[in-house]
Image (cartoon, rainbow, N blue to C red; front, side, top):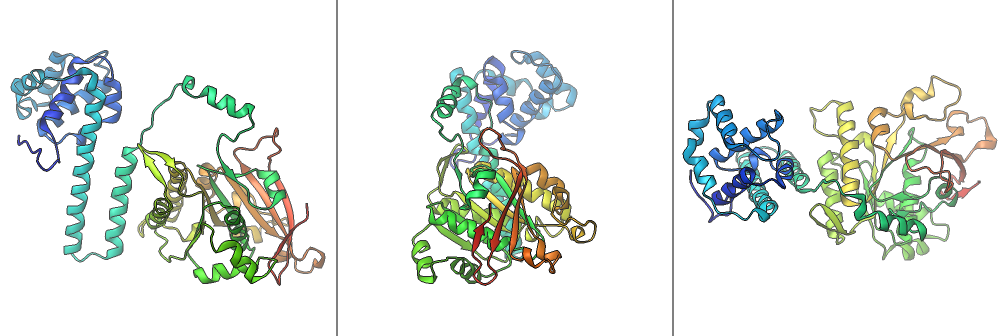
Length: 439
């Protein structure tokens, strides 16, 4: 067993200290089991011993603290006692000086070494990929997946007693203060029906092609930006100049007015054609950091971003080998996780199945009409759909230009504040692109 502290990859004495705490401490043992994996140890003997501890725990053989003799017997039965170093290794643990009050601190330090090794292994693997001539896109994707996994493992997921925050929640409710910050769409009738797009939430705006969902989403995005919301738009099928032209064209006061309103605002557009899921997530993370977002121990301490729009879900893929249904399920789950992690609202545009055009007289879309609807329904905090009657019935001239915004799912709907499922009608001028609310 070599000791290598100089390069800060691992600390053998620290590993012995952690294992000693397992053997003599009665407090923080369960915390340690939850937060440590076998791979967090570097030394082979330490890994054998901790793996045996985990097996005993899973078998219900550990109560308040670990019985050393039972532990010895368990390792002997596995045939690894000699490989571990036998009684000599156990004695080296028992003679290690520790401060039992530092158990949790030891764990944090051990995790730090573990993350350094994972990063080092990743860099070695990437170097090998480069030498083997793999494509840069594949290499970058592997880096993102590994770094994302390391970052997720760093996050803290613990139960917190309501005693620690119930007074703050109650005070906010009494003062009418938002518990979770949200952002209005800019359409008063829509805002009245669905409330705000809230931090940590995932929303879907769905429609058949040519219904105007990109234009409508851009109108919401630009309205938010004008009102000092930090907004990012990722579009996988249009150039950024085309998108901005649409935004400027929807300003009823003209081009110069639109430029004046938006030029100094935190409004960002990406027209990347790379719909790889990890690339989309990486873009969002990058913008979050560039805008001053900061996280400590997996918690947002400074918001660098408020709302992200992704256009659209059908162009987001996990890997080339992933089945479409699995890819959508992974994408919705990861975007939902990302919204909570970064404390941002994510609004994803999605397509409606073609079947709605053939199977029924009322063409208004339902949740079941969503492509790969199961994962979307599960992960979404809100699902909103657009419908234009003239698309299916062009002879009904009196309904030309009428668009319906339909709320099909709203996790936070509350009759007390008026938020609900329902429909809002508006008129969109085909020449100017301007929207007029009819409700």
